[in-house]
Length: 151
Image (tube, rainbow, N blue to C red; front, side, top):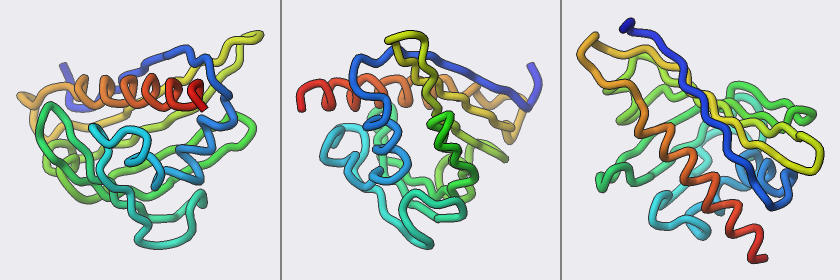
């Protein structure tokens, strides 16, 4: 195994793909209301919600441990319903030299797939692959979708 890697997950959602995209682009600060067991706070530090270059701080729980990460929104593509977050401070950077998470939505007929791509570089060869972070993204996808279906 090398130090660099990429993990990808695909999860079908039943709710509105536009609402899902909006949650991660414009309204991530509402995630603590939707998934308080996973996301405790999302705070804007610089820029505006939903714009490239904005800096956002996330407080979250992973495997029973409270963690924090500061990210910059690196890319947004409305057509692909894509948002890329690049971590630069916090627990993730203690574990990985680089860590980037992209969420985008693809439509296949009437079905919508949420695709998370995690690109990373480990600090050391012995460090684990970030499967737990990909699982966190999958769980977020399912919980946000379930919330939108209930609405």
